[in-house]
Structure formats: structure tokens, C-alpha cells
Length: 558
Image (cartoon, rainbow, N blue to C red):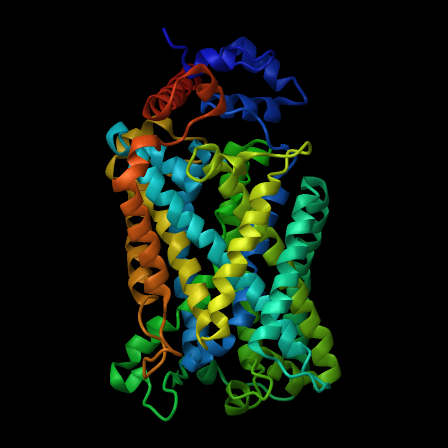
């Protein structure tokens, strides 16, 4: 008879899965209790503890907070926001987007608490779906998350390259070009990959630096701007000014060709792209202590704190605009830099804009960290070639770190011939990630009893959980449609939004590959312990689910 996951877990000396009162008491008296419990829970799911578990709640939150990096999205897409709806869409749109994104975060936090593994969304989809559909949903979710992870790394780091290129033009004869920007981008990716390769210990210190930069640094930046501004815009300008700059080459904008509402919903991309990447807290759960509690807190804290800090930064920038037409038509090609020049002069602007670049750099660094962990887990479960499941002696997934950097570089290459490539990359990141976020939430909504049977410490209640899941899925469906729409008029080879193409290729490719060959060998999450003992695919997933249900029952008895 084949051994069960619980049997396999019990073979590991000192790490059992029993939840009897005596064992609980012993665990509570141990200084290593959270790590032991985490390793035991991971073994319940069929995996060995391979990655170094050294992250605290603060570090887990810090990575997601750094990837969200409100100053990154706001700075790199401010021109897009101001010309696609104007100040009103930038300010009010931020609040609307963050409100609905919190529902997505709540749904994700519940599932993360129940199933804390680095695979994140694709693993959750496999666990929550009935055995008949488990492998299919894991495959589809995994590939959309894969796309979104690569695209968000592209969006952040390519945005940093653009900012550096723009900053270099201040008080110099430097002339930016697509080729030069790609070169800067390549250098950034190489530096990010190199730092990630050194392992968790150096990243922990950089993470602390990033938290300070994105909290105290951004706050000081925003206060300095609004305090020094010679004049301030009115509240009517900030909250009620609509602007349509979507027409190019003398053409009318989409506000005329379609409607102002069309322009406004397209303008939500600035906020929605910014509030992405909070799944990093889930992808780092195998490296986080007390993951069932810390990882969901990391998800929600990163969204909530970014919501507050981001809105404060937006208001300070909008109220400090000195000349709106000059800001959107800046000679620097960067509205935020133009605001800083108008307020501080070129020397002061260079100093403050360097702070922005540092924040964006850290966001790109930790985006690659999250990206590599997802790819590591997907390779571990045979979603991509198994060579990428290897880790070095420090427990660092070096192969996926460099794979993530290479793919992010490739995704930015269309910028050499397209004026909307960066905006398209942000749309791809947003859609790819939110599809992968919503798949397991939707599955948990449809087969809610299955989720109920394995819920973790963070739980919203039966009715609350369903309401949150329904709102999260509805919002995701809305933004998928909106961010595939054309952004500039007229539509031609230079202005085409190639987001539907990229997302379509992944959708058709993932579905086609599943039908043609993947369904014959991809059986969903396959834990190392399970693989070694001959338990595979759906049977392994079902046994992992049974262990979680049994453990939950025992906890309730205790």
C-alpha cells in the first residue's frame, strides 16, 4: 500500500504532524515553534523545507510593499494618468481602485493562510478545485501568474531605466534613445539578478532599507514638495478636472470618438498597475516564519499602507503642479520631474528624483525575488523544465533568478519599435497577475465547501468570505476588459495596445498545450516527498487536502 503524506511527514525526525495537546504544549515551549510548525505544515502538503526560512512578518510585508512601490507606479505612469482622464481620474481613481483591490487582497489572504506555499495562486487553484479539474486549473493559473510576474518585473525595471534616462538629460547634453534605455535596463536586471543570487541574508538588509525609503522617504519627499511649492492648485482642479490627451497626430481623443467615461476607465491603469505584486507575501511563505498568520498579514498590510501613502503622495504632487500644460508637455518627458524642477529648480529636482529612482530600483529588485520563487515552485511541480527547481547551498533558486531576468529583458524588446510598449507591459502585468489572483478565489467561491474544510487562521466567515470573493472576481473581470482596450487614437502600428495579443498568446498557448500534451503528464502540484515515494498528481493533491482537513479537525478538538 502506498504511504500517505501524513505517513511521509512522520518519517522526518523531530517534525511530526500530530496536533495532540501534549505535542502542542511541547511546541509552544520551544523557541523554534513557528519554524517547526511551518515545516510540518509544508510537509503536510508534500514538500521538504528547501528554502531558508528566515523572513519575519516585517520582512514578508516589506517585500510586497516594495514591489507595490506606490512611488514607482505613480511616477512612471503619471503622464499616462494626467493625459488619460486628468487629475480627477488620478486622485479619485486611486481611491476606487484601492477599495476594490482590497477585496482581492482579502480573498488572497484567506487562501494564503490556508495553503502557505511558494507556488501561490496555481497551487491554491489545484488544492481548491475538485480532483477532476485540479491539474487543469493549476496549469492555467500557473501560466497567467508566470506571465504577470515577468511583466511586472519588466514594468518596474524598465520604468527605472526610463527614469534614469530622463534624469540624465537634466543639465547635460545626453539624448535618450530606445537603444540606450534598453542598455540601462539590461544593466539594472543584471544587478538585480546578482544581488538575488547572493541569497536571503543580503536581501533582508536591503529589504529594511526599502521599507524606510518607501515609508519615511516617500513621506518626506511628498511633504517637501507641497511645502516648497510657490503656489497650490485648487481642490476643484485636483478632484474635478478632466483631461483627454488620448488623440495623437492631430486626431481627436477617445473622449470624442467614444465617450469621456471610456477615457476615465482607461485612466485607472495607473492606480491598478501600482497596486500589484502583493502576492509576493504568498510566494515568500515558505521562507516566512509562522507563515499561516504572517503571510496573509503581509498581503493586507502592503495593500492598506500603500493605499494611504500613495494617496498622500498623489495629492501632494497634484496640488503642487504649477502649470498643467507645461507639466503634461514637459521638455523632460516626465511630469513628476517637471513638478520638481518647477518647485525646487534643477539641482533640487535631481536630488529628489534620485530618491525616486532608488525606490524604483528596490521595487525591481524584490519583484525579481518574488518572480523567481514562483518559477521555482512551478518548476518543482513540473510546470516548466525541472532544471529550474535547483537551489544552491544557501537555499537560493539561482536558475529561476536568471531565467526571470532574461524573460523580463525579452518582454521589453518591443520598446525598440513601439511608443506604447511600456504602457502595454504594465497592462500585461496587471491583467496576468489579476487573472491568476482571481482563479483560486473564483474556484473557492464555486466549491466553497472545499475551501471551508481547509481554511486557515485568517478567515472572514462563511458569508463574508463569499461576498469578498464575488466582489474580487467581478472587479477582476472589469479590469481585464478595460486594460485590453486601445489607449491612443488613431490605432496604428505605433499606438496599438498589444496587451490582448500577449495575454491571448498565453491563454491560447496554455489551453492549446494542455489539450495537446500537458494533460498527459502535468498532474498538478507534486511534492518532493510524494514524488520520491511514488504518489503523484491528483492523488497527491487530494491526500494533501485530506491532511489539512484532518489537522483542522484535530485543532478544533483541542
